Amino acid sequence: MNPRNGFGFLLLGLVMLACPLAAPGYFPAPPWGGSDAQAMWLEGMGAIQIFFGGAIVLRHLAIPALRRWTSARRAASASPVFALSRLRGLTRV
Image (cartoon, rainbow, N blue to C red; front, side):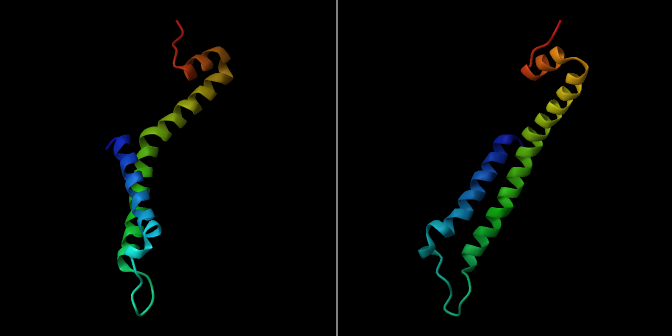
């Protein structure tokens, strides 16, 4: 899986969560009370989709960015010019 898939899962999960809120007429409550099973299923699966999509995005984008940032901070304590060039993506010769 790649970050595009992760963002797709996030978007799909948000749509699934928003459906019962945006169109409550399509998800009527049963006559004996409680919530509609279709709405509950959409909300539950939407939350799962958001969780998996967020995990994929974190794994591919946020965690590597955090590692680069921490290594640049460690390098900054040794040599400020070198650390700034690493943050900008430049290499020093």
